[in-house]
Image 1 (cartoon, one colour):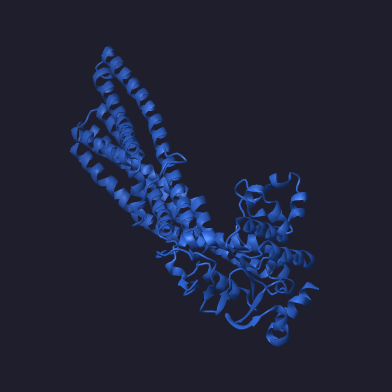
Image 2: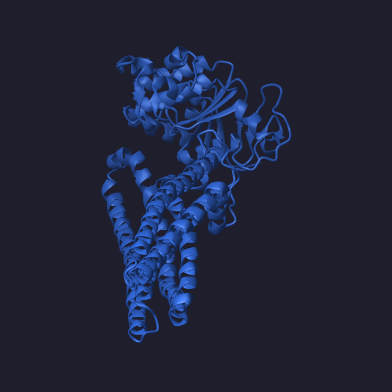
Length: 563
């Protein structure tokens, strides 16, 4: 079975069926063993009626007790051996499913890491969660077809061959009847696949909405929008529930037919065999054997229907995984190196220029406009931005990531100790904690830096989380720091201290922040005032207050909020 450090291989992403086949091919020995064990187990199930017929015809009916004892012993031996085969088949198939499960988890996690910053821009969090929680298990379960599925085919052919020696008529009925049963269930499997696909799509959307709500519930509550969002969520939940009932309705038909049709078929074949026995065309022992053969076939047919059901669901899940695996990270065609000395970052689309060694502030009435500018300057979206006159797209992406850090005020915080959250290593965070005015956070925690943090640091307040994110950015000590709203959740006193210390800590380094807070703007060397995503005025905070009415109105409004 694949271990935690083994390379899962390169998945086949040409389609859902091909992905499932890739999972089988990644463990050929185990897959073949599962097929052989499943086939042997089912064939020996069919051997039981054969041995019973021999015991009746050659031992019980003529009164040959020695022969009867011999056939009974053979029946016991075959049954015992088949019980052992059943255990080994189950163990092997469990390993097949677990390998498929872990291998899919590894390729999905690997793809998430490969996408990196592009992940949130290419797919929703709910989609990834749904894949990890539901699709992985569904795909693994679909591989049941490797063992019992193959065994059912072998058992079907074996029983048909045995029935030919008893009655060609009965063999013909079995050979034609079993495929007819499978064909009758087929349309329901197609309906199930369509209903399951729609259900999974709705489930992914709803899971994404849950993730969004969990992250922004406090803000929604403050704005009075919680009721509206709750109504929309309830409406989507009811739609998902209705679609779930449709999936359940089709599933119930599939499972009912999977049990009912084989049982009905058993009754028909038994009736035919009884008439043949009454007419003297087959012996009593052969009648018992026919009944046993057909009774054994109920299992393979049920397995076929079950495998069809699991494969239908597995293909739907595999298609979602394949769709995720086909996503590509930000394209990197850059061949040039980063500038050898501090240089200007320029975004022609907005007119923003970040001069080296200075603290630059971007102010705009729409925070998304300034955040988009920083996205372009950090090369998280395609643009015509330049660095030292060289287009960012021509510089190798790893070199850009080494020198330019985009610090998002909503960046993810993983679970772990506070020290692991902010450093990920053994560096000393004391200076960065002081610069971000986060000393009090550490002092208030029971174990200081070794205190455990929940995912997204939800055991901290919004302002504390924001300061922790700033600590992490300062510890990285990048050549160019681009910070999105680094103080938006802080009170005025703390914000003033952060602004002052940020300037001191980043003295001589290139720093750009997006903000409308006068407490931060007053510490900036240069303020760029943007309207509709374009720079309309440049200067110091005091100059713009005097010369630019729009800027003055924007900052004054923010000052009123702080009061």
